Image (cartoon, rainbow, N blue to C red; front, top):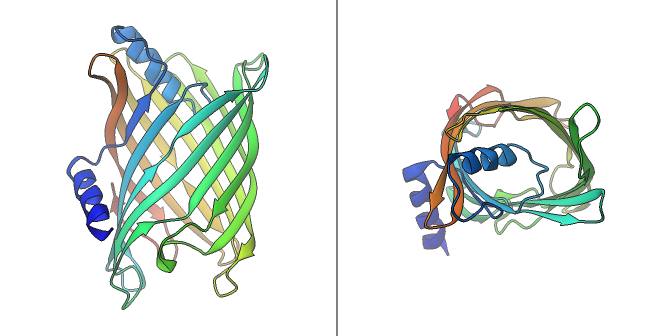
Length: 266
């Protein structure tokens, strides 16, 4: 099992590439279809099955700032049509983690982290002013295969997305709040607010330039974790018909918890 995760991390470390496979692309279209598909991937509520895989690397973690972590987030997105007016969008995050010296004296850990499941109820058509929105529940499941890879708590709360698409530009906001309601009595309660404003620009050649800030506020410890992320992705064709967005980016931690990551990440 450890060899499997070591191979996954080593493969990802060579490319640092978030990959998103998308299903509704035509089999043999040109750059225009690639551009339109790139725009759809900029919309977290698009009625399109996709399979993002995002590798993250952070450093300077832990009380001594000598820890590091690789996290491969597998994030399938599945829309379901309820009726003529509404979609339900399922977004899942399944983390594969390999970390070292994050906790003093604990050495290395590899395995699954805690799963996060979001469900958005979203109108199929934008509002009269072009706003696209979705709202629903978010739940965190204590699925970690090692106690040091998860919080050992069940947590749930509301989540919301609001965005607008204007030509090549997409901008919006994702937010959620989670409270713990079950799980281990030996771990800290969960009371977290997540705020993510985002902006992306898609070129006619299907390059996507993205900027977002993933702010997390812990109401129990009264501190912030605020990474600024800059990304570049390119829509490409794999084989004869499958389209994929492949790219990478850099992050800088504007603020962090006492034992959280610092400086730059990938």
